[in-house]
Length: 324
Image (cartoon, rainbow, N blue to C red; front, side, top):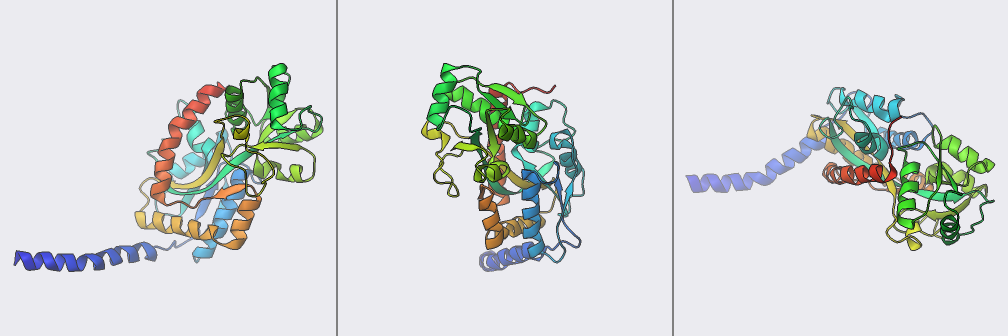
């Protein structure tokens, strides 16, 4: 009897597996999924959130909606999701800054960036572009490094403030290239770019999505991208690592759900986001913004995020970023 029971159990296993898969596929939201963005409309995080919403709207019967809950460097929106019902209907559009940098900068966050969330999908990676005002006496990255070494502190770099991706990209570059810039901090990337175009600062390490318009209008000079390799969208612009060995800086954006969200909901949403990145319209938009489309599984994103925490903490240390 035991032997027959064993054979019966083995025969039933594939059916059970198919049943589990069917359960995952059957999960469907019964109202719109809310994508919470902790930053203002029009920025890179908001732009990505709206592309995510487009992917989810195509997959489910209810349209996904983006909700901007701005403040405290993204912490207000992130906390809102941490406290939301874990039912698959609320996600945070998380960036490296809001989810990992804030964990290293803030001593008393009202949420735990790891324990209070379930990873859903690493949606895109985002590199920055080192751009200079045309008046800067450097027509290439190699010339910029030589000029900065000969004139410590002479080059002004605009950033979106201490702890921003621009700040980290510039600080890591200084550390590896053995140069010194003078940091001019702004309340966001947009005013830093405005002053770069006006010639009030010399260079900016800007997310590609936030500088591509000025670059294509020849208002700024592109010296490098900060990804490990040249961008397929901008193949003529060198990677910074070609001149500064070991230099690479990228950020990322993805989706987290509240901890305890059922696995079938997490898997279904993750698959919908991955499918969305295969949609030609969404993919074309992603690439045009200078993003690298990813569309990971929840497990892949969770592993990635665990590795990000110490990497980002080291960036915070190198940069000397502190809260005012």
